Length: 165
Image: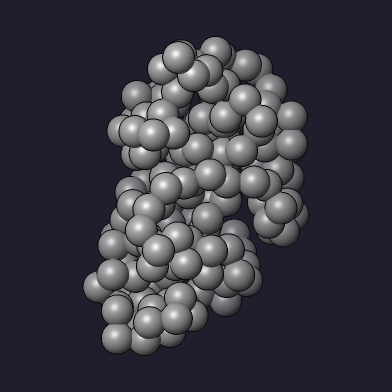
């Protein structure tokens, strides 16, 4: 039986919930008040069987608050743990290198992840990203500037991109 911690923080967009492993690595996060919206996104091999609510998750809570208050780099060094295939892991790592305020296209994202022809696979990596915000998939947009899909909705994605510009 594995245990994780969960906390929900008020943000200017909506409540933000994070699920973290015992060592503080983010397993899942997003703009929701319910851990039930996040748990299915966590790989079964990482998914905690017990979640202990916490008011504060230390560095994770501080980073979420600081990011929403304008410190866009506050999320950069928070550890994240996700499981996926080799390309998906590379793609998630590549997302963490995309600077705030500089959104990229899915084609550029595939190139950044090391497989320029794998645009659909790059988009799939975004869709499978459980640790939104810390792995900033909101920074990937369609060619021509169209927002594209986002698990937490177009209004949240638009707010994040505006916040970072």
